[in-house]
Length: 389
Ligand code: APR
Ligand code: PHB
Image 1 (tube, protein in one colour):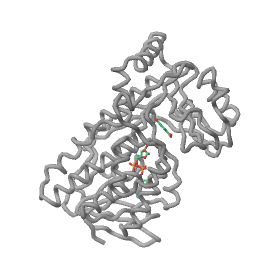
Image 2 (cartoon, helix red, strand yellow):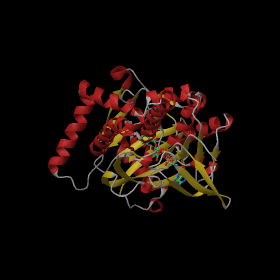
Image 3 (tube, helix red, strand yellow):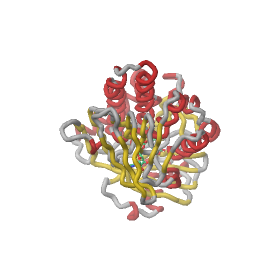
Image 4 (cartoon, helix red, strand yellow):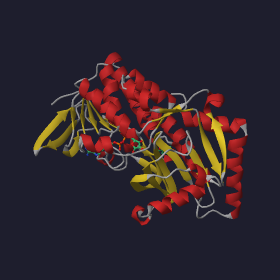
């Protein structure tokens, strides 16, 4: 097999890249080690920045998102039971769309198949070779048969646990990381969300987030120990804690329902630099992770591949290497701002078990400031809806 760009991984990064390249007339082959059913059912976050939603429209995959996605013009922030609204519309005149990442993945795969773009699911033993040559290759197995793809470039969109980042020779990459002393116990439930917008609630018992997948499906999270075993929590205990952390009216406004998904996510911030080696380019979670508090993961992955597609366009259309050489720099400028914002939201909202009394007083002042000063609220809103791309 031979192609221009070999793409590894059918998450939001790999799938969006394939469609972006196709629109530019650049060929690609995408391989994924899981099944189509698996990637379409994988539950992740679901907030689309303003520009990312517009990009899906441009790529012709926005129809279901526009119909079923929920447009939010603000969020609420809880401070020990008192809730204050950050109004995106009046502060920055933009909104966001709440639409599950797996729904985005379904729409992208459907478009991929409809356009006849090559995609292979359930491959195994993926490896990359000749990265520092101008003819790198991808090897993999499918149904016990070995295959090789000769490429001009390889896009490593294979997530945090993929094989691309570890294939870069030792000493090339510098990794920056912060592990947080808390995780999120998340549930999906058949119940009406407590508000039509997201509520990020700081509480002296710990953080809680009240989100949704639809007007009848609640997605909610409780701050917990990162090593917590989700099965130790009964549904009743989860609902009682979610009510407490919402505030004095929690009992009244939080509707309970059948819980059909429960799990714990640990939280980390991670960046690798550079994001490229020879003809291999990393994008999305393969290169960076953000804690979910700022809802930036899928948006950052989408931004990386947009920059990569522009760089490859310059290479193929103008013969220019400058843009592909500048790929890391272009991405990192956005990534570090998203890291800063995700860190800020995470540390402002969670209860740090190691915090001193001074830290706690400062934290409450920070929450008060960002929810009462128009200038501060505008900064939060500008980052939440997505910085200009
Ligand atoms: N060969 C082929 N595919 C692989 C391999 C491999 N060796 N290793 C991993 N993959 C696949 C995974 O199965 C997954 O489908 O790569 C894909 C990576 O997708 P994501 O993890 O969704 O990463 P990305 O596309 O960068 O999207 C980032 O996902 O984790 C969330 O919060 C994150 O929202 C963000 C988004
Ligand atoms: C979600 O709905 O899963 C969600 C929303 C906002 C976040 C994180 C997760 O910041």
